[in-house]
Image (cartoon, rainbow, N blue to C red; front, side):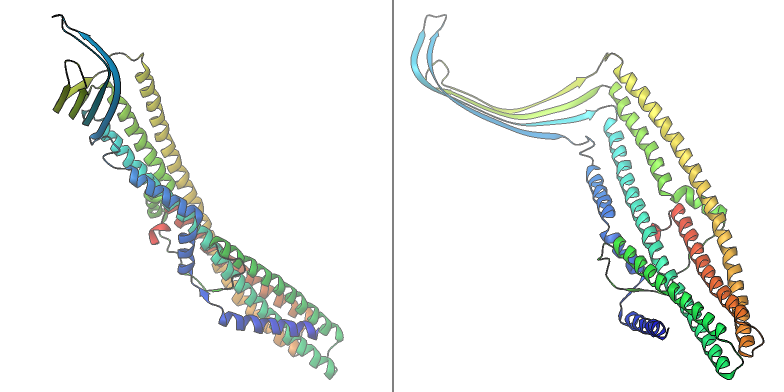
Length: 437
């Protein structure tokens, strides 16, 4: 018995000393590490960067294209030429060369405004990738915050159990004093030691739970699971307003709603791009050409051309077997589906917010009740211990009072954790978590 008590005392002192020497990982630091190193966030940011590069006027088809071409050929031919005047040329192994070069410019002047619809669609894709990045960041923040809060809760559970062990030690001292004075019995002493050992067993389990909670946070931060650290005693409380205000914020800030809204815009601009194919396509063509042909014999020994050329071309599809109409009808249905999906996502988010808000209110009420219960249990525990010290009551009453005190403290800690968790969920639904980063 004394060995176990000594072990508990030694471990408590060792953990206290270790906590003093262990670096404190602040909540803001934990979030920053998670957002900087998480693989999913890195991939999302890379996709966002790619979408940003893709959104430009050149990719939309608004700028001209310029091509440079060149060629050169060499040959040795046998020549036999006869003109209408009766002149003739005949020679074997005549060297010939032909050089060509050109700079060509093609610029679409009109395509039914298709290029502008393409640019708008690329803009929406860029914004969509940005929203996906923030959505991934939000998920990481929720995971890291939940793990951080769990560590705080486990630390407080350990503190509550240590207090129960301390009070049980007082019971043992009183029982020993009464037994030596002839007013007590050995059964009370044995029961007090049994109860203390039970709480010590809980203390060991809580230490393991704390280690697991720290390993979970280390994994989220992509650190070695054995990395030792301590956390702050608490984090800043989440500010929760009225349900109507949060509902409006959810309609605008929720990331799934924003993504559904972008899907509508993308389908709209895709329809415009396709519909622009009904219009004629007018293209400006310009070039600067050079050619040089040389023959060792014949009527033309040198033939060279150098100069610019410009022109305009137009194309219009008269009949395409109704393929374009089929595409437009399909795209119209896709746009209608996107609009229906937006309303569905918006409705689901409103429902999720309402349910989370109700759970938050219930958690607040439970928190207040458990806080009151702790005060009552502390008063009852002190009273029972004094009555036992005076020999007015038995060990059973003290044991029940102490167990009730420990249970009420654990329930209060669970209630505190539930309030923070529900507030965190409300922030997630509103899309407020990433806004604070």
